[in-house]
Image (cartoon, rainbow, N blue to C red):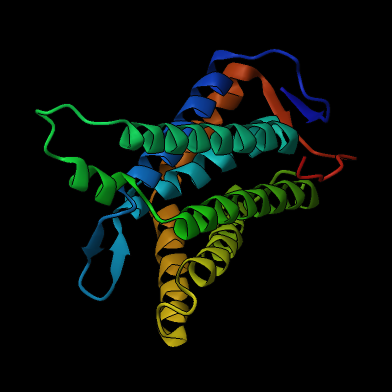
Length: 228
């Protein structure tokens, strides 16, 4: 295994493609089910919380194995896929329904979305995912590849924190009281990070397996951490 690889391989391997597809699917599903709220006893969260943290776990796997530049590519692919699905849903809603179609209002309520919330979601996703990838990459170089569990938890905490800090003020600022917005930010960040910790053994197993298949362990030495 090449422990000092710093240049991206041009190969698009099966494991990388599978992780990329899963990343995009998780984002799309999370965006679709985000409309539903769920009571978990001590807090109310969105149904998207069941799926969305998986994207951060996949992000960690991609950074750990393939490096920041590959993760950046997948983040923008996820953004483009999510945007395409959103636009197609809006187009489907706008199409005139047949005389036998009686669920237009329900479709608009579930898939219509509010432009402000959609904008908040897209901006927060890109910023949070990039922060997660950047921290994961830098910590790997600084630790010489050790302490994966710690790096995964810290990067998720900052990534999810950035996502929540951006999303909730943009989506609900002036609509909900600011103390409620702050509570939502803290609750989502803590719960999503706890999700990462809970599923960490699976993340470690996937990373080890992919590294073994790919015979690669990328260190981002000398990489320019541009978001583009």
